[in-house]
Image (tube, rainbow, N blue to C red; front, side, top):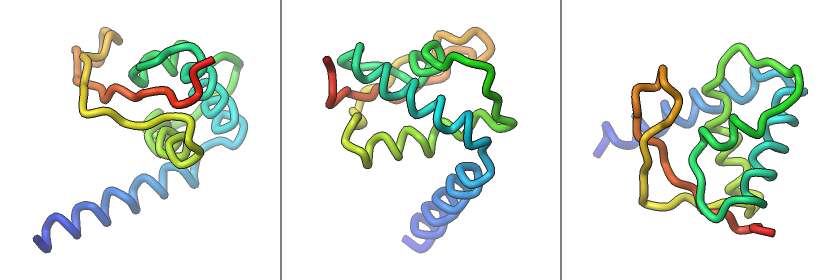
Length: 106
């Protein structure tokens, strides 16, 4: 039980650290990409968000998309499902990605 609490706290702290260090312009662009993806797909994985991330913004740590997905969840744009799909990004080697459900589908 202690290990679960400790590991969850460590996860949350790491996500906050990554989120705090992200380029603000990239953060705005990534949130726009999440919103756009949620407006056009009933269900999607984060790979779909990356396809909608346009512009020249850059972040040194692409893991920053995770905390932003949680921001979108808190905003009511998306909700996690219990489903997973393999990543279609070749260098991710079909790693399972959570399926997110849109709550704002246009």
